[in-house]
Length: 297
Image (tube, rainbow, N blue to C red):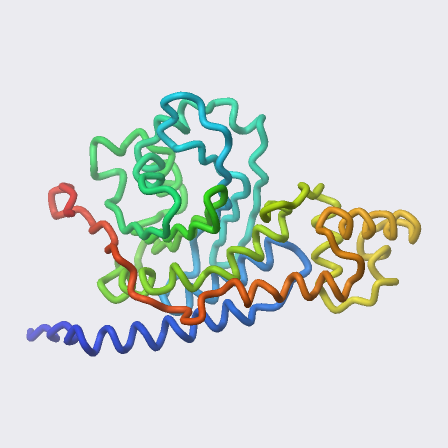
């Protein structure tokens, strides 16, 4: 049987660039949602449309004051969103969940991902179950439980303190990611900026912002939506007086005086986006392992 020859590089680049522009614009125009998790999942699924992946994760990581010799450069997961074909879950990573920090610091996959912290980067690493040095990673459990057969990751450095980690999975019965998908993620990682900054905004981790409580985050999502303000109390299950107090607290912490100013702040993320949403990145994804599980550069 004759195999189809791979597409010429010029054709591949043209196709990838066109798709990347479309996906970046879809992120750019993504409206607010009733919850942070829904907004995050909507963005992930838009990107996944171009990658042929409806599963994966989004993690917002924050840099804390690192102890001496911290191999993760101080970065810790803050929020974790797991996106499935028909499911969505989110976790706020608290100090309680980080008690077993030693395993986090020793995790070989996490240590590789943090290398080069502070810049955008893309990973298409090996199946951690096939490489002896990676078999102690927490990813092994995830791959086994969810039937993952391949994973592409992109890390968007929002600033020196915050990063958005985005993963796209292929599960049992699906093909591995190929050259086109790697190139597309490399083209997309810079264009994630408006989406990444808005996620940070929603959870109260934008620069120079006071942290928002979980209730304030709920109120913020409602304020950015299309419900009339008098309907917010009912949606939050609060009295009108308590809802007004919550809204005032959100405004004070964000540094705005009205809903109009709040919306202007939300849409100002467009101004933060690069004028050209897609550009060639000065790196390439790490390749999958060879047939015997050895890594390729």
